[in-house]
Image (cartoon, rainbow, N blue to C red):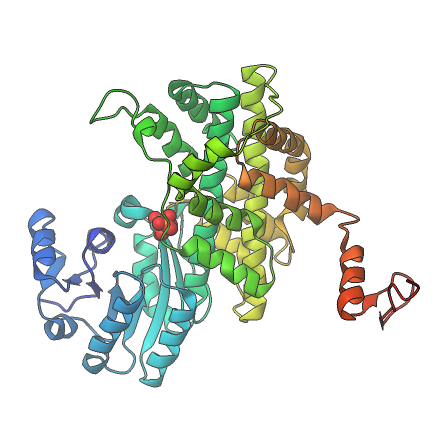
Length: 471
Ligand code: 6PG
């Protein structure tokens, strides 16, 4: 047999799906999994002429043509270092390891540097799209040595989703850039999901919408400017009956959501970089608060809501208001995420091409949405655009929708509904365009209590004032 084009280590759902996707595209794929039974199951359940199982790591490595291309599809964290340790003695200079998991980008930077010392090449490859994406075409964000990219590009581009005929895969930048961009993708995903959850709360509790009505409403939204994967699956979720009891499945699901960490990482990195991504932080925080179920139940009996009880004039008007609010807030969330990537590009000298990044988010990934065409166009037209909200198209969109965001957020507050992402969106929008944010008073306070100095509007330099001297 001809040697294999690529090897995949880790054959659980994502690894197996990607391996089969590659095999479908004519590549010879070697598969290896730490536990032999997983590999056996894969070849039994999904036999494929181009997928070759290996049960010994040395034999797996020997089956690959050189330079070897080995993709890790394993749990992020220590397991990745463990497999790298096992692989290093088996590889030769020029061989390439690709990490297709949700690894933390600083780990990817460290691993790249370590492997470079051995003459090995390391790529951190963000892959989005879940099981279906991996099997039929994900969005792929490879980061690593630009010269070595040519050796992996044909395989990654072949298996990626396509948008308007172009593969949803582009070289992102050196060292940790691919995993960084995947991290921000997930941060935006958190904000998107939280905004949809808040829209659901408003429609259910202010408008009294049933699940069936919500399903129809979301389906209609999915025909317009909100068209996206997440709106589409949400419409389907509202329609799903419970298979274990009577009623709708959604109503039986515990009101508490987990997280694996990428949203939180995005928020932590934003604080380190000094870039505001309040909506992503709010969305990660909302999941944390959702986990305090027992305390929330206790507090509900102790803390009065004191609602102002503002009702919507009519349900159709409320639905339209929430739709517009969701769209406006979504623009703000993407503006924050892209501003964070712009800053990282400068800090890490990655030369990120935001237009290309937006273009590969158009299909395959979880945040795929029609309006990513407009984001792509915005950054292609002005690659130096400092914030998406300043692009003329998005300025117009916001001008038409911000009033609804304001009203929807106010309705939520008046009715005692927690809307952390929507309220962050309007606060960010207002802070971004505000002539006065009150920071003159903060400067004065800092100088007053700590002699930190202050700057003046009428002359340059830093000044200190002896505050309260006259007392
Ligand atoms: C994707 C998803 C994927 C995964 C998230 C879930 O792009 O395909 O983002 O990576 O579903 O990591 O993250 P949480 O468990 O943190 O919600």
